[in-house]
Image 1 (cartoon, rainbow, N blue to C red):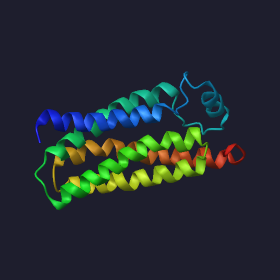
Image 2 (cartoon, one colour):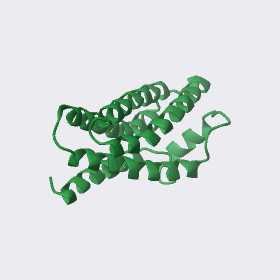
Image 3 (cartoon, helix red, strand yellow):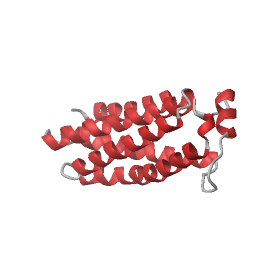
Image 4 (cartoon, rainbow, N blue to C red):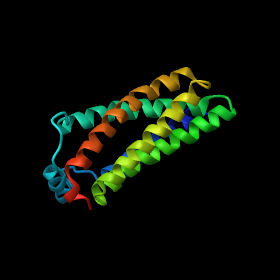
Length: 164
């Protein structure tokens, strides 16, 4: 595949996931959702809102880079598995805001987070047999997901009455 097509495919997938997620996120554009999210009890280690934007900007770049590297890698079973897991991770990234913020299913969002840990782990593990740089590019996402899942579990536990 041509480099430009591979890059456009990887970046397009990431941007599409973020656009879908943003449609339901507690941004200033979504006042009701933002009000609901702000009303939730959160643990003291919850990062301030702007941190999420900064972190996800970096993660998006790394996710796109990993996908580009995997798309460009020679065909193999490991590459196919890594790409499927990468794509499932992107689907989970797109789906989390829908479950958490539109449906207000805090437990369901925890399930999405756990699934993301699994798909990202598989993507990294199989990518390590295909392209080491792609595998390393996935490590910050996995680290963030571990933290975010712990955070999501606490938010779910602290807000049983706010479950959609």
